[in-house]
Image (cartoon, rainbow over all chains, first blue to last red; front, top):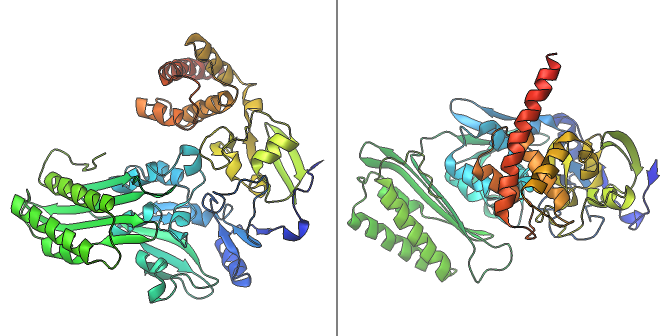
Length: 300
Length: 165
């Protein structure tokens, strides 16, 4: 048996737990509430350059918990295990994934990294909203949280919203993500890199619309302008539902004015690049809403 | 921590820290120099290996994850007929890769063909983007991949015929 030279102080070595079932995972998490859940590890390890990673003291690895890697679908929703890799999600559900979500996943990283990265990991990063967060937010994804007690379902915004109490209490884990199927006729997902941004900072815009005959039955917009800041325009969206399509020039400019006013009223200024992109993509999305012949509705 | 795994078809065991990079384990301990150390962030793709059939960046995998898995590096893959086809296609199309990206290019192309029998132009471009190296122009590389696809179909057909007697 080959033996490696110790490359670090043994006192610092991590303890890695690798449960093989969901119940064992929950028990281990309850026994080690301060442990860190390790799914794909792409975020945890991304800025480390030494030959030996610096992992937290106790790590619970999910790679052997098959229950968390399942992707299932019913007539009403798609359910994705928190430790399902992004590649697996695309492989299993390419035909049913909403185009905006598919585009967000495919735009995330290289194929090799997507073979490791998981959906749960993408959502659970505490200090950032990564790329899939805004898209799933618009789609009203719900999350199954399990701990010592009964499993509970929470809406996605609760996960990282400290104001309404922690979405994940100590000893709890995210186990499943449920995405309801809706007939989003038009979808748009755009990602950009502002010139002023630091490394790894990107701007995201996502819009969804549901149409019925000649009117909008639902429309939603969101934009991630900083790693922690996501803009929603719920009041404006609500006022726009029921408008005729194709959207008239008057309705369009009214919506854009309201959006501009809303962004100006924000406590923290919305930078120029982001503000202009939001308005530009909204304009484009609205003009596409009335068009036929683009059933997939994803504009790349 | 003792980590038993299958490396290029052989069962091996190694006693090392669970946090050690798989890349370091393969390169420094097993002396597999086709696994390159480069960006260490999973961006460049030059440390790619097959782990349980999936192509992954070995720089982003702690050693304990390899436990019980099947790892294949370019040293193992280069013993196969599939590799010879890729090498031949490179030669025919005048693709001369640098030593850093050549192993990863072969592995990523193989990864593509293991998953998709009939890859589209987009699939090929996505595969080429998995390795970030600018040593060779993409046009001959694309042609080489297309040539491998044709050769691979012939190989699959030949194996099927052999199986059926």
